[in-house]
Length: 81
Image (cartoon, rainbow, N blue to C red; front, top):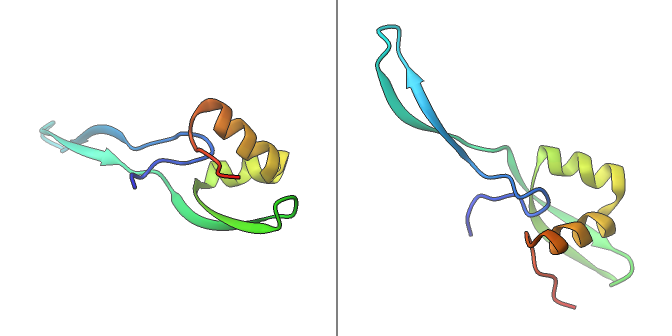
């Protein structure tokens, strides 16, 4: 699976390393991706998702159920019921 946040949809960006002599070489800016397990009381099971640090803040703010619903609406994840 690729390195994409399943809550926010964030993915790595591409940029340049720039030396003192102004030489430019390509590089990737990776995201702060974590694999976390959350318990869903309505389904009585736990789910493991790949989420960024920003995604964890969103989950803390709006709750895991609402965050998963928004992610499925935006097409970031598919939930099997």
